[in-house]
Every structure is written in structure tokens, then in C-alpha cells.
Image (tube, rainbow, N blue to C red; front, side, top):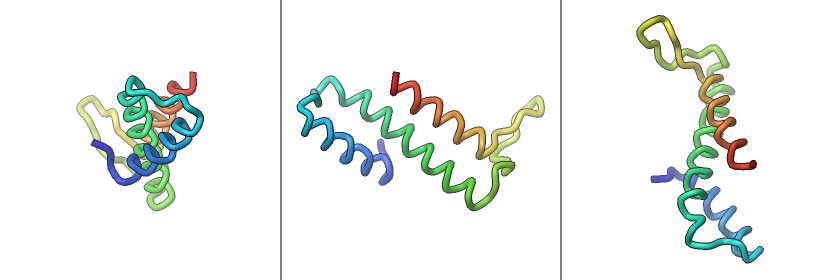
Length: 84
């Protein structure tokens, strides 16, 4: 399920792909995954602006932590993987 940011990106990209004549039913799943990654990246970027890159989101056993900067980086890697 896409949030508002993901849905807005879906509409934007689907319109571009439709206008170019390249959008098919087979693209639905991949486009959804891309829009989800986009939304996560945008969310992490906004949170970074508010809280700073060192903000710890969660601490796991063994001393590992999850940070906003890490979330943004992971979402960015997912986005770049779709560009290949």
C-alpha cells in the first residue's frame, strides 16, 4: 500500500510512461516498488532536515543502531537499483 507521497509519484511516473506509450500491466509491480522506495527516501530526507543525521531510530541487540542517515542511504540504493 502506497502512502500519499508514493501515490503522487505513481501518478507522475505513470503519466510520463503513458504519454511515452511504454506503460503496460506488467509494469505495475515494479512501479509500485519504485514508488514505495521513493516515498521512503523522501520521508528520511525530511526527517534528516528536522532531526539531523545522527538521530538514532532504533537500537538492536549487539549494539547496532538504525539512523535516519542510514534509512535515507538504503532507500537511495533501492532507487538507484531501479535505474539500472
